[in-house]
Image 1: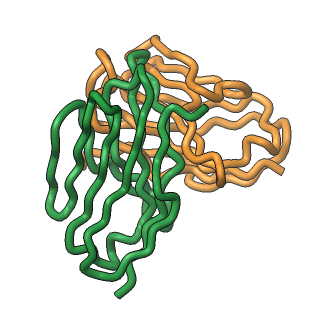
Image 2 (image 1 turned 180 degrees about the vertical axis):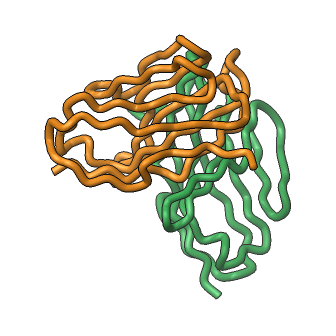
Amino acid sequence: EAQVTQNPRYLITVTGKKLTVTCSQNMNHEYMSWYRQDPGLGLRQIYYSMNVEVTDKGDVPEGYKVSRKEKRNFPLILESPSPNQTSLYFCASSLSGEGINQPQHFGDGTRLSIL
Amino acid sequence: KNEVEQSPQNLTAQEGEFITINCSYSVGISALHWLQQHPGGGIVSLFMLSSGKKKHGRLIATINIQEKHSSLHITASHPRDSAVYICAGSGNNNDMRFGAGTRLTVKP
């Protein structure tokens, strides 16, 4: 089954404790992206990747890191999480690396709470 | 200034009504996506448009490139259509810009 898998689905942690949210897709998609969703602010793009070893900042990259060492995986790293990173996070992928004018497939979301 | 503006913010309809959600976008956006998010949070891509019109079941999406405007229509609405509908623009830089979403409630 074609899917985007995020882990964990839920996490409560404390300020400053490094964490990684994994994202994996099994569709051989070139484009992958991370978004956060906050009440009143909607969805905002954090980072995206056009292909392996190619990553770019979205609207709200501060406090986050990403890597794209393999086509299928695009982990989101919070080196020193802070309470303002409490949010619902989505990973998504789409087929083309030449432009994202392709439908996006979303993961189920990761709800992060930073205390 | 948000590059994707969506209206209305909230919409309540009776079952069977025809529904329209509108989206305006700015220069630099080359394709428009319509997404659906049900309570519980999962997001599904409904349509991606760069021109014309697309139809899937009771859902129709249109885009007018000259006016930079897109609409999502739902015919014969049903309570299971209740969700948040989000339009998003993909830009020439391959980034994504999102509208604030329209919360649709369809009452039986």
